[in-house]
Length: 129
Image (tube, rainbow, N blue to C red):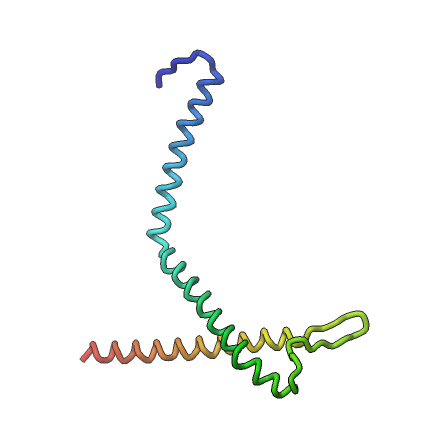
């Protein structure tokens, strides 16, 4: 590389800029290779579907399950049930709500996977004939 400047500080800055561009290009190429090889697109789609699914489950819980539970607790908001142990306050209602969320999500995911595997078996069985 021919330099127009004799100053070593300017030359080192030029070398850093040239190296910087090479490093950026290499990083870009490595990143694109990583995206293509590791199925990142599939993971991103799975995350998006999971977020939408979580909103759906939360709306079922808030719109259907919670009002039914409030009937059993005579109109009180059971999510705010607490137990006071001296200076410590335990929010039992929040724990129950989280457990219900987990229970409903796990049941729905179980049924969904069971359905998908059943359909896959039907498809594989019909293609082998």
